[in-house]
Length: 81
Image 1 (cartoon, helix red, strand yellow):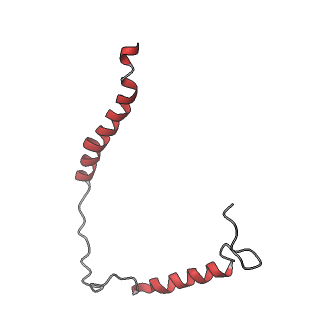
Image 2 (cartoon, one colour; image 1 turned 30 degrees about the vertical axis):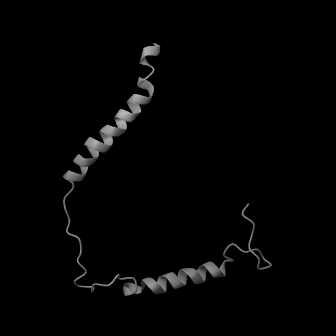
Image 3 (cartoon, one colour; image 1 turned 180 degrees about the vertical axis):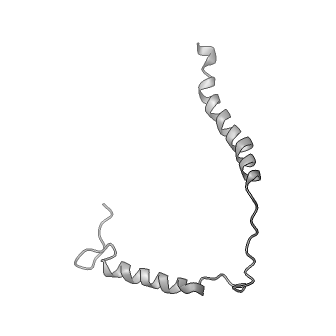
């Protein structure tokens, strides 16, 4: 029985290697390829200011300030615990 003790760590490692080296590459190869957008219609910028993303971030920050934002009633920060 002791001579088979090496199987305990070896079997999960073998399963991991099979998943990483066999099944995952096969799954990625089987996916249909979709072309990445080149940014032609929307310009070459990063697109953060387009579509109101900056406004949404500001609105979320305002909501965070309205509900207290992790501060106690006296205005100081709350302890970690």
